[in-house]
Image (cartoon, rainbow, N blue to C red; front, top):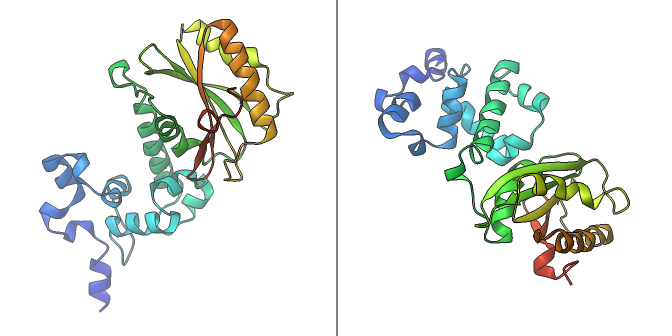
Length: 234
């Protein structure tokens, strides 16, 4: 029994055509499961679990990749078989994946609906512990030029200087913007301050000839489009 338990953690004991690294080289990264991709980062498992099984345990514990992203560094470090080095590798890989979406102009995402904007932002913003207000800068084809962070902390209509939201848009000659902020509580229901800020932003956009397409509030796995609800857009 002891020999079987010890052998189980060695990923080398898997059939060669089932090892994550070999499968990635042969079939491409897209063919691997999330647990297998994590296993490549981990390289080795722990007694009783190979690296793939450790990856599966992490995904189950944190509720998938989005939960692993939201977890703070110390919590990831504390998981059996990880530690600071492996936790850093996982966090770095997730962040690289996020940045890749905006790396190449020809691969820049296009925003055609509130869902598109939420999909781009929710993965990161739903994990933030403070309120952050960001502005998506769009070209004439609604492709994302840049995402600018304007504020973070406790936001209300008296704190937000509307002109600050348009500085980057004017500098980059953006045709339109989408404003987004998160509610750390997880409930994306717009507050009276959210509606007041939206109304002021829309009015300023008309004066500056920059279309304000939406204001999206991000919660935990949910979002609200103020444009869809007719709040602040008149």
